[in-house]
Image 1 (cartoon, rainbow, N blue to C red):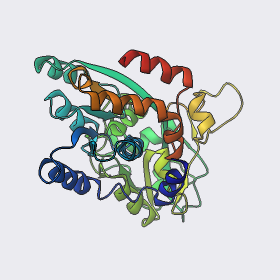
Image 2: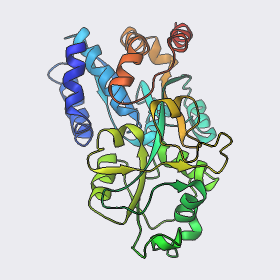
Image 3: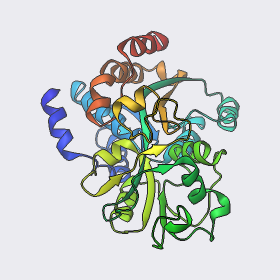
Image 4: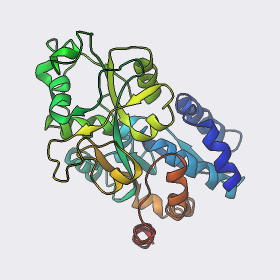
Length: 319
């Protein structure tokens, strides 16, 4: 596994873009030429995808010829829709399930188990040529992203007077993304509350490309995506205005996300598994494999693992 992990590190996030096509082709293959193989179906968050994809790759190698795992990227909301219709076994989620989705699952008779699998920090990103931003406050982020900023806040100088009159262009995840929900709640005080005139995409590679090509860009996405694209982008420390330790603005790192000092933009990420699906040996084996190998594989793709004790408790939960 160690050799494969090193190889996969070199591949970075370039696999995200064609993931939907790959998942579709794999599903078609599984249902036709290789129908004898058992199938585990996963869909949901693009943030959680790199972990689940790494787990799926290792699991399939260990179960060669017996089990196929398909991993789609419909966004957290899209994944929950499929999950609550009983179309998939596991939902990747970068936020907790909402009350409305809980009701949808109840109506469909879908019972499930929630499994936190790692921690992630949201990275605030600007273009490499942006030399004026040394840090940004949560209040300044709100000023840029709140609904009232729509069509009004157009220049960097409107965010902070000492910044230039350069046009500001915003990039962020789309509305089906759990990252979008988390950011808007943490910064604007209400999930989904945001100005409408920004470039949105569920595909974080689109956001990376947009920010890297626009000097006036400001955007956000999961910390792991920044780390895989650090040569193209600038990471900005965040000051939440509640500093009691005299540390000032905080840069997201493994340490600051894990200990909670990178506030309020650090969070747990999840998988949800259907209890009915867990009755199938291949699904239970996959989820068990996920939790048993999560420490190594989450770190491999740039996320922050839970403690061994936590993973063992989750294993007991599904057993």
